[in-house]
Length: 212
Image (cartoon, rainbow, N blue to C red; front, side, top):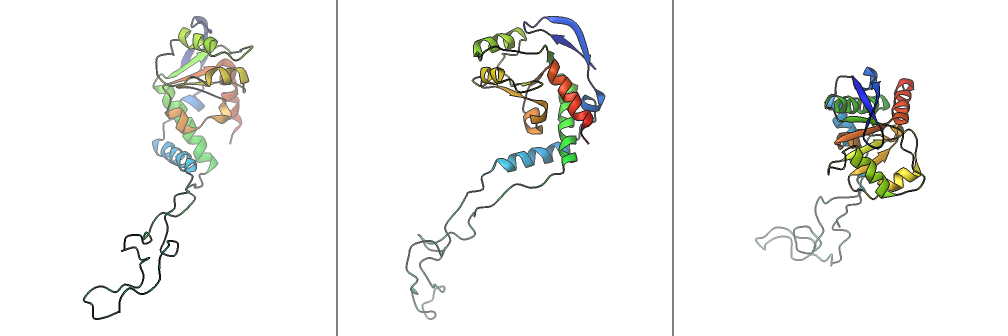
């Protein structure tokens, strides 16, 4: 698959880049992508939920009534979960939701996500973006030239971290900036257009050609 390279004004430069089949032409493995997204979302959970058990609520521990002869169920304390103000039975407790996922599995998931975007025609190539100072207006002009300021989600991938580009895009709600090593399956599947700069594409190919 070949993609045209556009300049920052949205004009076709006449150059084309052939996408690597080892990155963008693989068979999409939906189950592996599901596992990677599941782990990503699980790792975002704080797990600080907590309810008080019967040993943590305030109240008397005096036996309410005699054990037998009342015609009702046995009751040993007002702190029991069956009474108003008592502890909660089987309530949530702090826990760690994270789980392990093999590196090779995560790699296959990211490559599947990239291949899925390529097959759906959601990848665009642009010249290297360099900004002398952070300015959202200038970055927005680039998106307008590329016809990407359409209310949909756009992810820009650059070869290395460019502070001015990151700061210029930070104030745009549906625009994110990343480097190849910072890509994850969740964000790739959650974008409408993957905009890759030329140096970003070179870094992406280098990263996945050397990875195990």
